[in-house]
Amino acid sequence: MTESPSLDRVRLGRGLRFLSLRMIQKTGEVEQFSFSNGAFTLLTGPRNSSKTTTLKIIDYCLGDRDGVAEALGAAVEEKYQEVRLALTIDSATHTLTRTFTFGQRGRVNVDNDLSLQANELSDWLLQKLGWPQLFIPLGLNPATAAQLVPLTFRTLLRHIYRREDSWTEFANKEQEYLRRAVISMFLGFAPQRYETAEYDLGRAQRELAAAEAVYRDIVSNTDDSVRALVQQLGLPPIVDTQSLEGVRRELRSRFDIIQAKRESLTSEAEQAVRSGSNVPGLDPGLPNELERASAEAASAAERTAALQKVIEEHERSRALVESDISRLHRLVDAVELFDELPVRICPACEQAVDPERPHDAETCYLCGQEVSGDVRQRRAEREERALASELGDLAEAISHAREDLEKARLSETTAAARRTQIARALHDTRAARLAPYVSALEDLATDAGRIEQQLAALPALETIFSRSVAARAAADSARQEVDRLLKLSSTEERTTSHITSRCAVFAERMNEFVTSFQTRVWVEGSVTISADDLTFYVGTRPWHDSLGAEARVLFFMAYCYALLHLDRDLGGQACAPGVLLLDNPFQQGIRVNVVTEAINRLGDAANKHGVQIILTQSRNATNISVPHSEIRMPREYTS
Image 1 (spheres, rainbow, N blue to C red):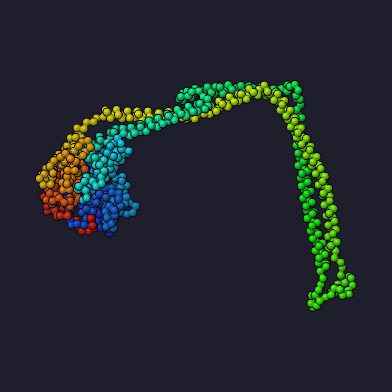
Image 2 (image 1 turned 45 degrees about the vertical axis):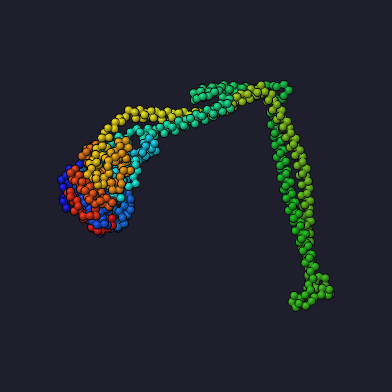
């Protein structure tokens, strides 16, 4: 192979350069690939010899958020425990480490002193590269975009890491608004393109339209609601918060006047009641009589209640006596029943016994022994007579208690009637004394109640007006913001000459590359780039409409060629990546000799300008004539 100058002997320039890749196996064995032996490095070897996997590991170290198996394959996950990528960013050396152990897979260790989440590495890389960290509209039209999304390093990486399956498109499954943002970033005018008032103006115009719609709706509802409340409550005309405050002051003044009149009349009425002045035809001693009558009515009511309680107790006692008498009756009946029960069989010998055989009256006709008479019946009869006497006493007591209850009820009725009569007379007396004030107080109370109701409704009206005021203020604020952004947009520098010139420089580099292929693969027509929407044209038509599969591969070879010259052509004005990862450009249907020539031109540019290329191919490197370093890959795990 022809050795290319090592990276430490060429002008590194700005951007990324990859120095080495270390892979630590679970057994502790270390595999290492060095990319610092030349600007152009070839990874060669047969299929399934880890070429593509090596590029994927580099990509994984740069912040891939997929799992190890998804990103690199199960074989890599099973064999290795850690991978380390040494790189330079603007000549400063760093090491990125990804560990495959659980709990650490989603993190990237930077220089062994900074641990970042995989998605946080993008900001770190952009900062180190000195590239702007931008948020771009989610959509082609900034004025109608609903939100902003970050332009990450991972999005940019898709254009400098050309995977085996993306040789016929800018990046696999990439949205058009992202492609434009990436081109803008590489050519150095992304801040001017995206840090403008265009997105803010579109958002402000949408907010203004929404605020004006809300204001119109609130104003319409406000007018109807205020008109209905004013008419219902009999309020003076109210059109805004100022007139509402005037009505509130007027109502409070009237209410204070009414309250003063009520207090004055109430004081006079109380004085009239306390003065004791005689009213013709009315007794001034009625309050004392009412007090005595109330006491008599209360006493009568208590006596009535006591008598009712006595009667209830007598009734309960009588029920108990009657129950005892009933039990005694049953006892006597039982004694008589068992006394007459004859003995027919001898309990000892079971011989029949004749009760009619001769025996003494005081002896047992069965055994002949002397017996005494049964006294239980006589005792029960004496107890029954005593209870009958007690029952009569209770009946007499109940009768007397009921007579007393009737008298007590009559007395209670009489006392209550007298109390009512005296209370009515007292009421008439007081009404006669208060008559001159009652009518006026009732009128004042009515007026005060109406004013209180009107005052209570004013906060609701105030809330209605405050909603209208707030909606109007929001609409005015949104309108001012739109006016400000329109003014900013009109006065903002819109010169696109530098954008056009940078697009032209980039397109010319692509044309320089494809010129030599005009009669073989390339079609007629030059590459141009529209400065407005960054669409690539070949001739007069967009590139994807003009090119077939073979020409598309050559188109993206030319795109890579132009990226290699960014730092040389645009200097500090561009965001030059400084490195390209190209995975197997041979398997795209294009002729081998054409691909070989294109690779040689890319390698020559890399060597001249100190830009790094890492390219994989299954062929050996004998077809590559420009200086390069070759790494023959072992057949150890599938790609």
